[in-house]
Length: 322
Ligand SMILES: C[S@@+](CC[C@H](N)C(=O)[O-])C[C@H]1O[C@@H](n2cnc3c(N)ncnc32)[C@H](O)[C@@H]1O
Image (cartoon, rainbow, N blue to C red; front, side):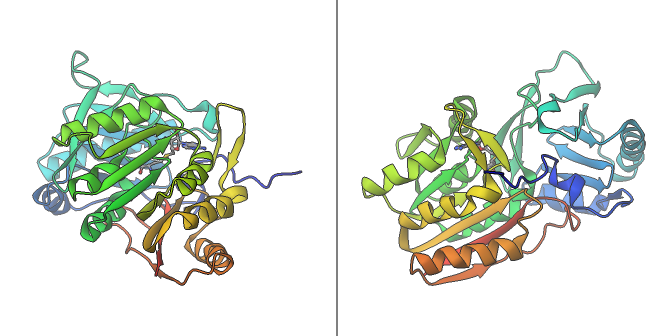
């Protein structure tokens, strides 16, 4: 069987228009973020990459050397205007292929400082690790979805493809029981640390190292049901048995399994970086699943983030089962 594969390219590289100048957030916007308890957000975005503020530090993600130098100069100028200078600047190359991904490098700042740090989002603490690999630990484009989860105050949350469990932490702070599943034990251990960073005991929270597609039928057989399910898979992965996960191919399998463990009223986050699955496609394909499973659904689209221009960040949509 020939698989139709999404390009293994970062979405922000392939979704945006060919030439997009780098645009910086207004200095007042940084103050507004900080007032809201948020120290992790984008500072700039363009076709050559983007700049993130990450607590006391900044990280430049770049497609090529010219873009890196342009954003580094831009950061210096913006810092003067904003009256905020990063303690360290990390840089990260955005390769065309996922298997060429490498950890960020320190460009400037004190080399003796630890490569871990803590940032906040709406007052919630998350640990980052610049030495952990390509991703530091918090996907900033999910900020609005995390905020939405907080508003709903769910009771039982299943966080699939949980990574460092940011959605779990938000749900736990609202008193929910949670199950977090990921192929990576290291990522789930960082999720546990994120709970601890927010003074949350682990009592009501399970962390399961398993393929999400394998786990959901087991949860179904055990009678476990959830009022929020997070589905934020990667475009492509391989589990420990060598089985291929490909979001475009397996999206319906994932959602059908989720619908089997959805409470009568349940919010399911559909999120992907696959450029072929924009919110329109997500809605069309998920409506088919709902029809097959005989579930009535509505959809909630969260307005785009102020620091993410169109074409940057994941495609996301909440499917509201009722
Ligand atoms: C895009 S990240 C998820 C980000 C996360 N939702 C967040 O907002 O922080 C993808 C995660 O999926 C995990 N993963 C990949 N394939 C998987 C699978 N088949 N089952 C469970 N987890 C998987 C990876 O280890 C990685 O942590």
